[in-house]
Image (cartoon, rainbow, N blue to C red; front, side):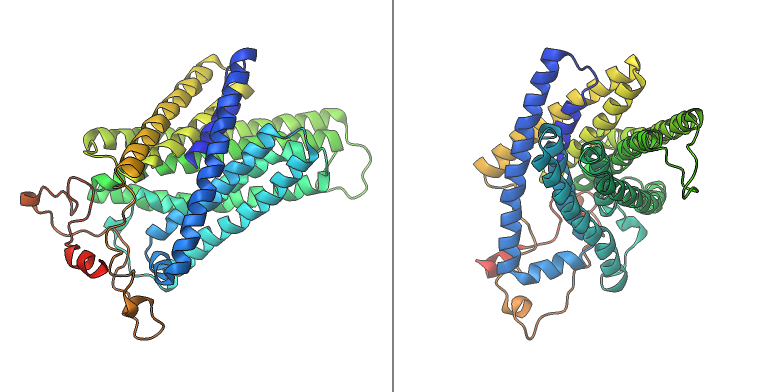
Length: 419
């Protein structure tokens, strides 16, 4: 999802110079194709895994906040949809294909945001305040990403069907409002958790960047929606309280258009200021607890930075502000460097060494007839939280995790049983 979002930042790069702009769009197109291939590959892997081991699906659904990582599915779908309208907007088939993909992303986004929270309220184990982590935000990012992708689709869809564009606008705004409401609740609890229990363990620090992604996606969405609504009101002479009115004066329409546009800009600045606070907090946390080894969770750096850069890029182009343009360009380059670092480390540790994609603790579920059989299944013991035991300094553990980011439990017996 970080790869596809990074291509959107290239498309909205704040310095649209003819040659460089085309060069950046070509790089963004390559990233978009890479994101599609990666998404299809991992989607096939996940489906195969859950079909072979249905017990793992139940385990992941009941383990909150681990289940919130399923939000990456609708986020990736919406990011791919943005690429469709970015590169094939001149084709009617491309616009309608993006329209269909948007509805698919909306469906999965609602399933994650509402379904995961309901399962947590009804079935999952109890949580402690110290268990709260930035990954909880992943339950709200799908709706905000749906809103931003819908806002991106609006100007292209309206050229083919105004009615469909208005439907997308209304649903996108509802997704934005619902996502922002839940996000504010989570961030309030997360902020209090940081004050009360200090920083999370090292393996969880990467998730501290996820609030940046949610707020940046919300900022981009509200600005794009305000621009389209302002344009629609002026071009159609629309008044919400009028059934068959006389023509509205052009001066009134222009004033209304300007007010709505500036309201979107103000909301965008507000959300980006909020995101900047969490950026400072996340960077400070990483500097305070420098990770000792690479883990797959570090991809959580890319998506938030790319979303943050994309929001600033679009705002800087709208306001034509040189300071904002420089800041947006710098964040875009930082997101690119981070993507390159994560891609190289994932290739080396994951593909070459084959040690990155192991999931410790699942051995006792895979191949165990008591877990996977229809009868005699063991009670679910793990609550999926980030509660950790006391650290063992002799083993080099910190907050229940060792230096490699693996929990301090002894899984050797489980591994022998699985083998």
